[in-house]
Length: 302
Figure 1 (cartoon, rainbow, N blue to C red):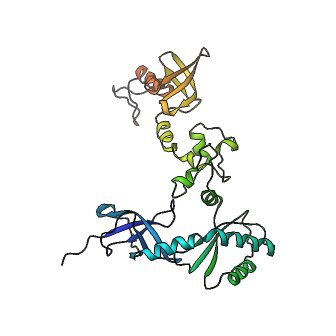
Figure 2 (figure 1 turned 60 degrees about the vertical axis):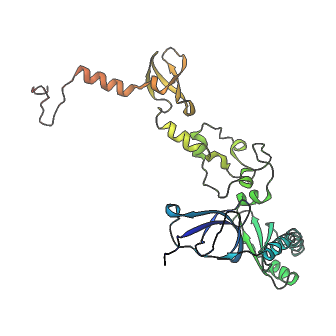
Figure 3 (figure 1 turned 90 degrees about the horizontal axis):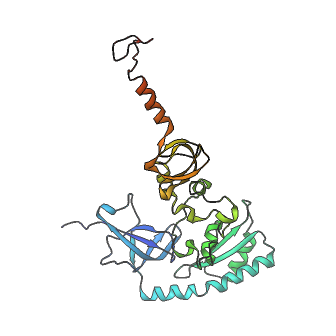
């Protein structure tokens, strides 16, 4: 009997959530958009199939199997529990206020599809540990027969959950609209693109560097490899000058000539001054001096 071709499903548990891989080989006729039940480190979850991988596209490593397709009853049950999330989040906030639990922000409440587990997503300023034991006890008394846990997330995750307008003016933030994962962002990316380092211009609504700083960074970095840096001396069709500005997307630089004129030149129109100087020296003395003190013409070097 021929063995089945291995298939891996990319599954997400939230509309714009991170993708996780599960082995879907034993589930027949699985399609993108189907809902399935899988076992995760947090328990059994209901997830949506975002894509199917097979052949050379298979991700490395072993993966937990997809248990089965979700039934219509489980889908309805999942929506029912989801409709209660806002109510329990408000209740948790009220109890936190009554108990004097300060320093945390309850961002969201998430029920699993069958209501057996309830997770409160929280955030806090700083790295100090806050004792949530009184709040956990109060919520367990209020909501019985449900496992309750608190999970702390960072400011970027909070901005993604809350949604709203972006700092750039877009009606919906990139993180809430299409970013499934957050990439590391650094000041270096802003510098490479010539963006002002004013915090108001490079900081997002989450208080961290904007995710969009990475979108074009690789293009700028690659373009800069083929252009001279600022303050470098270059030779242009109009004479020798110094680079005062780099325009990566235009593959050109602005050069300040010896007569103080500022002219833009394409990369093909300029030549590094050091290279030209080396060529001139070689033209004046074409012989190569070897370790024995002789040059190519056979004479001893003076």
